[in-house]
Image (tube, rainbow, N blue to C red; front, side, top):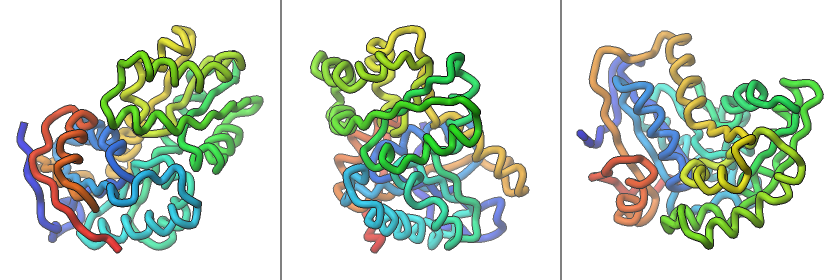
Length: 277
């Protein structure tokens, strides 16, 4: 599969790239869905690997990092920014939209309608980082959109390092998942939102722990669908060229290339290290 980097894009808005940022690697699951959905678009990814994880940091710190990340992508002339990080989406999206005049979308809002459509008993679970869970952003969005909805949340901080170690099928990971998810299972939820972009790689184990009666909602696909809609609505969808991929990180390149290929689903050849401060 072709992989090449792109320089900052000039010219008309249609021909400009889509910018995507995450605290590290997890946003590559969103990037992968964007590439499937929008094959003609140039897409630039920035992973803030020097400052990962965001989920254990204060809200003010996450907002500051998010502003810097978005500023870096805006400086490359992107036509749209996707905040492919649940923690950043939960803490910083309103401010990012005030600062930048291009469309900006997070990964929280697109998954909410899917969860509401999936639930039959109105009992929805959410798993994510501590910052995402404590923000309450999913609960607010779900309750605004659906009457009588009950939301049960659980932070799962060990899931991220387990995924990045590649331990997605280990007995240890199953035991951790059982510990985290048992309280949600007791709540009789029928829908579970995977509120972190790392978690889709644990779908197999999470599904085993929760049982067949629980629908798992991965917002990456819904986010890609929403991005496609926004591009069409604003008349900036690119349908006339073959899209290219570009990857930037704020720290070690080789680790991102090696581990990131698992998230992306194909080989990542070239990565550039940058300082976004």
